[in-house]
Image 1 (cartoon, rainbow, N blue to C red):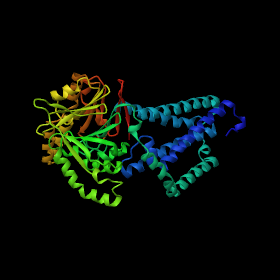
Image 2 (image 1 turned 60 degrees about the horizontal axis):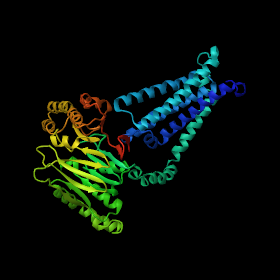
Image 3 (image 1 turned 90 degrees about the vertical axis):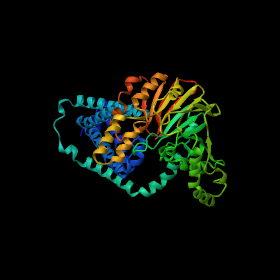
Image 4 (image 1 turned 135 degrees about the vertical axis):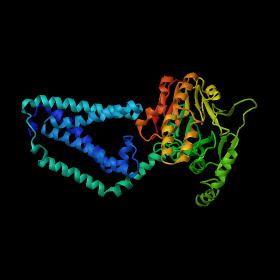
Amino acid sequence: MTAISRMSPTETVFRLLVGLTGLFFLALGIGFMVFPDIFAVALSVEPAYGPGVNGIRSDFGGLFLGMSFFCLLGATTGRCRWPAVSIIFLLLIIAGRLIGFGLDGPTSAGVKFLLVELILLLILTVSTVVLARRAGSNEKGLKVSELLNLKTLVGAAVVVAILGGLFLSQRNIGLALVERIAARSMNADVIADLPDGLHVGLCGSGAPLPDPRRASPCVAVIAGRSFYVVDTGPSSERKMELMRLNPGKVRAVLLTHFHSDHIGDLGELMLKRWTGGSNRSPLEVFGPAGVETVVKGFNLAYSLDSEYRILHHGPETVPPTGAGGLARPFHFPSGKNEAVIIEADGVRVTAFQVDHAPVKPVVGYRFDYKGRSVVISGDTIPCQSLLDQARGADLLVQEALQPTMVGILQGLAQEIGRHNTARIMGDIMQYHTSPEDAAKMAKEAGVRHLLLTHIVPPLPASILKAAFLGDARKFYQGPITLGEDGLLLSLPAGDKQILERSLL
């Protein structure tokens, strides 16, 4: 290796840049090896159970440690071929990210990561070109001594020692991190940090069929500082808390209808609102006729649990008067299919009938706040009342079922002898809205943005999204977002923007 004292200032600078880049990759590699969950969350990667954590540890950790090795080798030897290896990997990473943007749409986090990757690519490319020019014809073939020598062996030993020390210290490190992680979670108040306006968060964008990405239907609506929840499908309450939306601040729940996938977590939300906020009054639950039966049932089912918690935590912590829910049924005036059910703090909520026959009654909701408007369809086929409420709305949150894909599932179920499943698959196509019909309605109503949710069938892989949308984009030229849990759309007051980000 050429001694540092014999290097020109230019070569010194660029070798240092390559070395610093290698140290950055080294830190990432060690982080993914030892703290895969934490680093995965930081990079917006969601591990799927234990095997997912293991995959992140090995794949991401191995990738970044490998890139680090080649960068540091280039920095110490001054040979351009070694950082060029990391350049190839960076190009492949960037290509994958751009493909993801094309299939799934860009996200704010993804754009930030892309910017960092482009900066690293620029640093390594310029450095490699400079080192190549300075080397000229002196850069001969591969020398084994460059890969296996005292310095690389010492470096590898240091990395192994660091990893070993971190693994052996996991208990102490974990205890040290508990307070910091918990403080971040407990102090989080997404609602307080939102600008004035209407905000729509998907705490559940799926349906009864299991989907690893989606809980069952649940839409959080924040109008100013008022927090409402539309439907409470199974697993949605926990997803709400993972989004750092405090259930203790929920003002009211609005149910569209009483299918199990829309009410399954009502009891959990009533419980968490009570215990999480020491609320002294029950959670108000609005809904059409029949909501009394639903609320009464959950109150009864959770009555013993409520007694246990009062005995255990005391009435000051969990006031007995705040347990459970309070049904708020509403009815439509004669000859009308709409009614204003809430008008407070600048928020107006209008309920309207939709068509989900043979299920009756079924409603959707429109929220108006400071010139911004959101319409939530509920489960329905295209109908005039939904079209009327959606006219001129900023955002239409529309349930969607792709008949072509469900038809494939129906045929498969019939082939393998699951005739009951096949019958149900055929039935559900009759009372939902296809993405194409949702797009047609959005265009006719003059909606500014279409958000599809209640996704049927499940979409466990991103590549299925285009098949699910079908020809929807032919009928509506405005933005169409295929909903996923954690998505937040913000409609600032006094503005026309609709901003997207993820809370997961």
